[in-house]
Image (cartoon, rainbow, N blue to C red; front, side, top):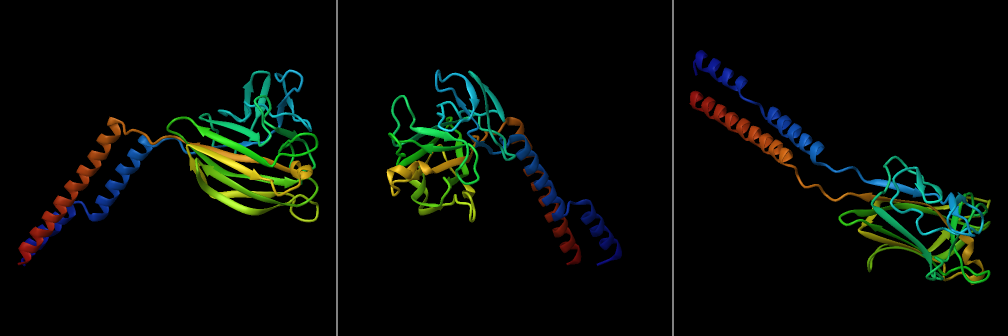
Length: 284
């Protein structure tokens, strides 16, 4: 191969995109399409049970009291840490993800009736938790089952991240905790130790590294193994749940960007192959 041929091959290789160039082009185009078309990230709300409605009329919102009733609209379609509602303001926690305007919540016990969800609030005494929820039964008894149903708007998914349980001044072993998506069990744990005394941990935290997700979720705390008189000694708090929006429909601009990126990549590959063939022919 002559010196002039070698110089020409060198110039052709310098003027054609390298494989690294092609990879960078594709990655940048894909990233741009993702930023344009991707939905909002999954969001999450934490139910803290820091407010209730008055027992006389059920209209005025005030701080939680021991024995207070949780009204049906608490936790529904949360848009912020402080949310104005008829009669006052409900407050919620949040761990950095955002809130859940497209999820409604229904909390009830096995003793629920058409006019009473069978749940009550309590300020302190359940381990180190403050303002907790428990299942109420007739008289001094507690309910054998405490449930929380999360329902997402059409196209959305509910994501359950975790919750906390605590015993009233003592530890309890309850029958179990389950999470269902329809008839499908997504999580089930039997013989759950609920901490609450002052000698070690004062709460039991159940968290999911990967949130449990479905259009509708049902969380159930099974207290049926406890005697009726102490079933209300297990409280529920800090329920952290979220929503995931439906996948986006690619916009025409996004599709064009993707096609342009693929076209550039294909062109780069073509010129790279051509340069290599030319070099091989010259060498031959």
